[in-house]
Each structure stands twice: as structure tokens, then as C-alpha cells.
Amino acid sequence: MNSLEEVTDFVQNGHQEYLPHVTIDPVIFGYHDQQLRILLLKWKGLNGWGLPGGFIRRREPLSQAAHRVLNERTGLDDLFLQQFHVFGDSPYRLQERSAREFKENYGLEVSDDNWLFERTLSIGYFALVDYSKVSVTTDFFTEGYQWWDVKEIPPILFDQNETVDKALTTLRLQIYHQPIGYNLLPEKFTLPEIHTLYETILGKTLDQRNFAKKLVSLGLIKKLAEQRSIGPHRSPYLYQFEKEAYEDALKLGIVHTY
Image 1: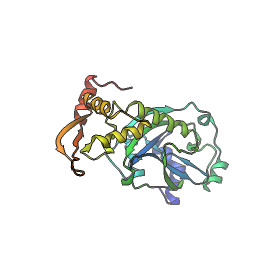
Image 2: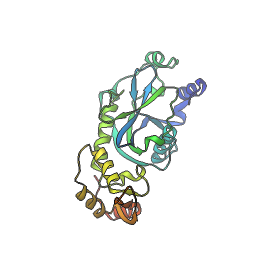
Image 3: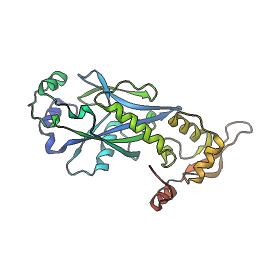
Image 4: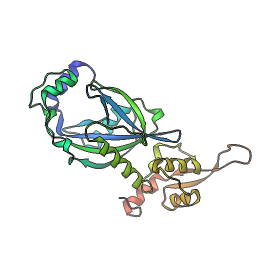
């Protein structure tokens, strides 16, 4: 949605295709070179950064909409995607919007009863990607993007700092109960590689021996008979995620989630 014609049709008639009161706002975590970052887009006319969100089509399943929005922004499919909260309590959600403000920001004429000015609830999802593989797409309302280190996140537009904080908290709570690194590591990896990933996400140091025992005992990873040669007298064993075993255990209630 980049041409003026497409945007005008969306603004005027979008409520016929999309649910007017609900948006999906994914927090996209990117991991690369031992850094955890989030994707933010620079919004035109608002002089600030925001999450890459979107609306839900009227006949579209919620999870399908979340994957579509993510794919439209990153070009990636088959990612770990987790719904974590619904946002609707902040003062921002109760503010009234005006046609004058909309025209000042985007240069588009709209009526005061336009569907985009109605109160909207936000469904939060978080996704995990290797951000070196992402091809970010902007649109008419955004003019740039940046991967921000989770330790240096700027003030975000709307009420979305709350969204990011909640997403990061949920990610850290679920790290031992979900195959978090499934999309972030090679198919076969060493213990130091997954250990570094988990330390980066949690933002703290973990005891390597206990860490490995915990992941194996939870059924999240399995040790392979293969080894990787990384130098003289250095050939660590490789490990692999037990994704199917994990999902079976979750169905049986063996692995507890928050």
C-alpha cells in the first residue's frame, strides 16, 4: 500500500475489508551476532518510531492475520509467533482523533467520523527472526526503519513502549517453556551457541553446565552423535531442537507455560 490511490481507498473504504476496532501490533525481535534487537518503523508526520502493525480482514482468522502482517513487513514465513496480550487500558486508547490532525500528518482529507478515528484495541504478538535475513518493507505512512538494541529502545509512539516491555517480559518468562531459538540458530548447534542466545535474551549470565542439563531435561534439545571441528583438540558435540517432542509434551501438560 504505497500509491496515493491505494492509500486513499484504504482510508475511505478500509472498514469494508478490515475490522475497524482491532489492530495487530507485532514486536519483532531480531537476533544476530549475539545481539537482541527490535524492529521499529519511522512514521511520517509524527516524528517518531512505532511498531509495524496492521488490521485484520473481516473473514480472516486471527493467527493468519498475524502471520500476514509479519510477512508483509519482513518477507519471512514459518516464524515463531506468540500472542501475549491485548492492550486497551492506556489513556492513549481513549483519546479522540480529528480529521484536521490526520490531514496535518499525512496530507489526506477525511471526515471526522472516519473509521480510523474510532477507539481501537491492540493485540500484541511477538516474533523471533534472524534480522540479517529480513527484508523490511515500509509503506505510505512510514519512511524508514531501524533495528534497536533492546537496551536502547527510544520513546515509541502511541502506547507502544508498554507493548515492547510486556513482550520482552513474556519472552523471558517463556524462554524455558518454548522452543525460542528454533528460528534463530542453525538446525544443528553447539551448547555455547544456544547458551549465548539465552544469555542475550535474558540479559544475564547463566551457568553453562546447569543450563545444558535443564534444556535436555525439559525435552527442548537433544544431543547428537555429531561433532563440529573448530580447531585443534576442539570438537564440541552438536545439539538439535526437539520441536515435535516439545509440542507433544505441551499437549499432554508435561511442559508448563505461563
